[in-house]
Amino acid sequence: MAMQETDVTLDQAIRRLNARAWGISVGLICGLGLFLATNLLILRGGPNVGQHLGLLRAYFPGYSVTFMGSLVGFVYTFVIGYGLGRVVGTVYNKLVESS
Amino acid sequence: MSVYPGPERGRGLPPAEGRGGPATTSSETTQPLSRTQEMQAARDVEMERANRVLRLAFAPLHKRAFGIAIGTACGLFMFLFTALHLVIDIPGALRLQLMRAWFYGYDVTWLGALIGTAWAFGVGFIGGWFIAFCRNLVIAINVFLTRTRAELRQTREFLDHI
Image: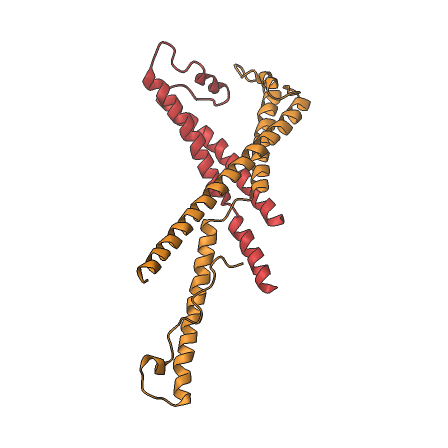
């Protein structure tokens, strides 16, 4: 009986996600995604660089389709991604603990 | 609950006399036996620890919980994004109402935000559940292949002795 309880506790401990690690991972994916997309457009060049991606400046003040803008965008999207990843980790852990 | 079938019980070191040692009295024979038992117990503990580490490495994701977690994150994002448009007038903002092409009933209103949240939760749940399913499947296939290879290797060694 005691062994079963230990196993259940162990199971719950094992199934937990590291919420902070999830936050950083999702943040990095989002941040690097925008960073790379912006810089790829800059490298490709053309008459109107990043016509559509540039619309993000409405939500991210300071962002533009330039190298500096990509750094600013990285920070914004990293923060948003971190928040989302943290939510996933926290909600998952709560549900696993209660199940 | 242990994954490992159990250490090689009964296959520890044989008693001293079995190993060609000198004849000993009964009190002397008990000492090597207890040492063997101690070694066996230590090995058991080590195996149990290894089991825990292995289980941690190959622990499956809880599909429903992961689906709900991803769904919650998507729903929350959708709600906050719509609410941002409702609260602040953003010049040059995206035409979010176009989302109604995919999310039936969605609109840039508070009611639409709730409907959008429900939709995003549903889509996120399905996506999250499927991601967890695929991840568990890949882990299970990996474990199966590794175990099969190990068993085949053992069998090969066994056949060499025939």
